[in-house]
Image (tube, rainbow, N blue to C red; front, side):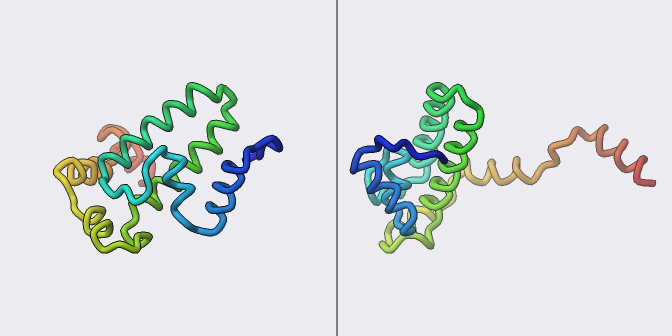
Length: 124
């Protein structure tokens, strides 16, 4: 990511925090309050932030870099191992019905069944 040389002290501080491995940068990037541990809230903030990035950055290269940072920050915020508070770890470890449905959908083949047959025939 190319840094703007006219960044404010607050923005520079966030960059320094990101490098230090603290979650402050991740919370700020998603516009969340510190210690937010509700999975639905974190996911909603990630979706909204992704939409804002796509709207405000027409350059695909910039978009890709920012979306990559957003994905990494979201992953860190959803990882219970990154949290020091026990209650936050518990909140992040509870699975909802929506989580289980996402898991089922993610394990399905991305290819249509017909495509799998063609691939199998070509492999023979």
